[in-house]
Length: 182
Length: 182
Image 1: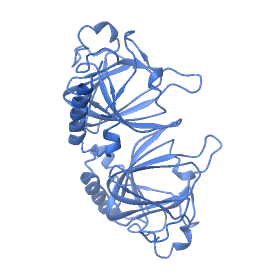
Image 2: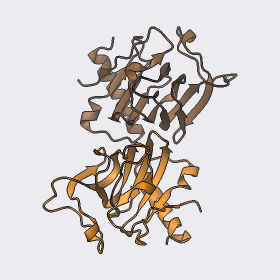
Image 3: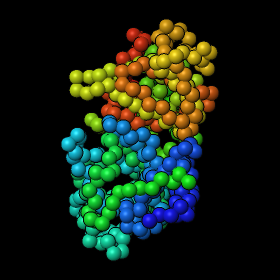
Image 4: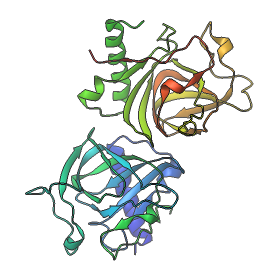
């Protein structure tokens, strides 16, 4: 459970990384970032901050902020009754991120999955993104990612986001982000 | 008609503005920017540079670059047989842009429409965007925009882009962008 003090600290660290990426946010956006610990209570290792610019029935755009070596856990975006599964394009703006998707596994991956959760990381085709690097994830395919040693700021362009419909490999995970609003 | 020398100069100026916005592009992207003069042969006043990150059947993301006081002319995105009209969200990243949409006209607009083309600018509800400012344009509604005195870099998040289907108020306009590839 993230405390108010945790959220204040996370907001501060996320704004510092967004500043390094020269991303300019309004005050209302700075105060309403989504902070997800995925219910694992280990934000430093498994977590994510999102700044959602727009999310409607047709498209979505956001910035993702990852602390150094922080992981967004393995998941997929299944088709829903109302729509095909979410497709998303990641574009790294600052730092670096190791993205893992379905396909030939890397023989010697550059990162480790979070300790104690190894069983829930099953796809190991490795794509390294640095600033300007970009990759598109097809609907309903497994993926996860981990920031490099400095952290990362990644723009996500996609179809509508319905994060609560994401299917995580780790059955302990819940999607219930906190807001940074203090 | 834009010459190779024009394109070299435009590429240089667009990259300078993108640099001020701290947007990091790969070399292949720098060499494949779309330069549109809308067939009016007056790029300094009516024109636009686009860097398209992704454009598929479901969503699109690009950066728009406008030189100081340059105008993107009035148009709308009609519904097509295959899809609803394009909806787009503009987010100013650097500089300033005056966006004009349908609605109550500004009594004293901050900008003038391009000289000689005044008849083709019919909507005057004014929205000023500076870095961090954002506005969404519904499908099939008229809009146009002009950069402020320093120029502008604007991120566009949207449904699929089918620029060749845009309907411009000015019947002289054609959408046939040149590439900066030299």
